[in-house]
Image (cartoon, rainbow, N blue to C red; front, top):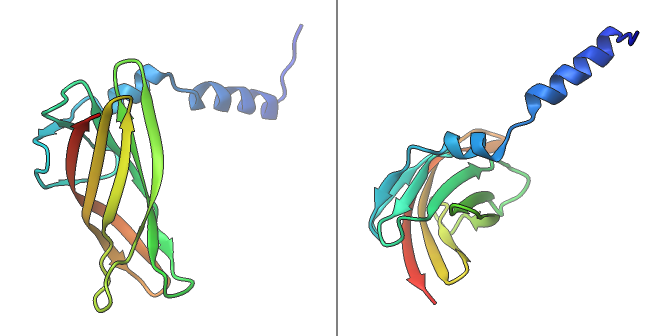
Length: 148
């Protein structure tokens, strides 16, 4: 008879509960909102948007990484994912503080799948500043969809 000690049992439970299928991940973003190309909108990590010019594609804001203040070059990594029925493309992009006076995080992200190209204008990223880091909350995006 097979005998399991407590730590072996715990490892097995963690492995089974930590695994998720692609179906479960897609359901997490099932409730998307729709915006027209170049229409400004607020988006939080975990939310998705469908650009009305291409309703078969979902754009997901996966995360905005907090930034530890180590020097004056303030930045964050914004990770977005494009999802189609049978394919997804996830990519991180560095966004820097673009101002000389007040701190403001904005920039441009270029991404796409096949002939569908997206330019994501990050107009602003809302954050809380502490003595040691920037904690990011949500972003204002505009998305331009083009077909090559």
